[in-house]
Amino acid sequence: MYDCLQDSYTDFSFAIFDAVGRPRPLCGSLSATPLPYGDGHALHELAAFARDQGYDVEHSDQQLTVSDISLADALAINARYGDTLIISCDLRRDPPVRI
Image 1 (spheres, helix red, strand yellow):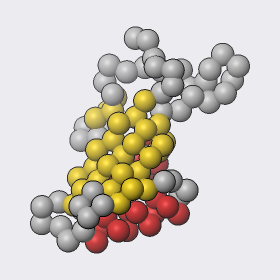
Image 2: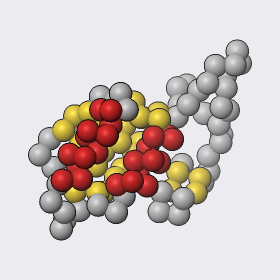
Image 3: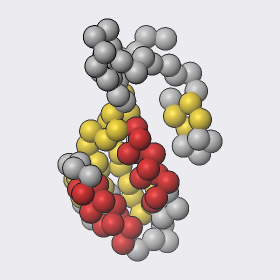
């Protein structure tokens, strides 16, 4: 599991490649909402940024969801928008990892 507040992984391990050498990246969905004092402008910027990166985006009035995002892009979004948005991300690998 990745803890974005501490920038660390805990209780987590995975093989980057499968048995035949194909990458098996973590991917999932990222959701963002404006901070209580925010105006929502950053949400629109994030939507445009995610679409420019080729991601599908669902955007409602106060929430944005980015589908099938990679770990690297989720971290980049967190670094870029983490001070103006509340960001939550659920990333998994298919098939799941056995610990």
